[in-house]
Image (cartoon, rainbow, N blue to C red; front, side, top):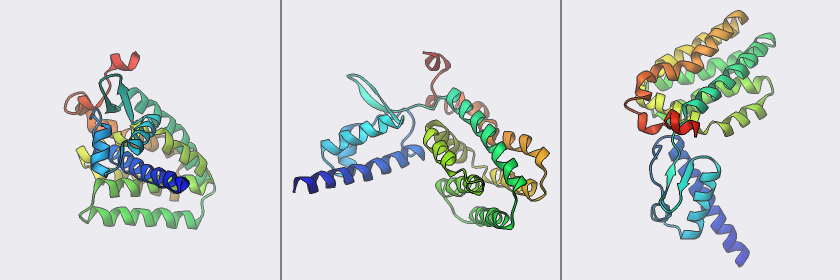
Length: 234
């Protein structure tokens, strides 16, 4: 009976953790927002024990931090981390796409075209930012999968605590879904036509486009979502 109860508590904690993580990554729970054991208990109708476990896991994932004797807060976004993560993705995805071009096959072209069609159809419908982000991520995953580099893709997903929320902020605040779609169309054309010399510029521009679209809003309208440069250096 004890083992069953322990399993049940762990299962509940896992479900709650996934739900809260999703809400944090999708900016439903905002950077800097206080998150307490009581909030978790009341929202999910659970006891203190799984609530503490959930908070611990969120801290370990880099999504929550604690100020002793004060409260638990959702971590702020760190622009230095975001820029470095983008730098890493540019380096990796440029290589991935060049390798794709060198080993291009019809099956991959079909997958990319199908994904573009999903994006196109979504843009014509009443969709959520989360739905668009999911198809967007799938587009990039297809390229890694084609190169049998899914382990690298999975590691990238684990690392992008700040970047995922930054991308969601770009999507939610700016809502320029068409621009992201057009970038993907250009990239597929480059791949189809094996224009390997155009890969570097487009990948760099595409992955930096969120910073460009948000512009001064990072330092004005949404400044409270970000760690200041002084805090980042400490």
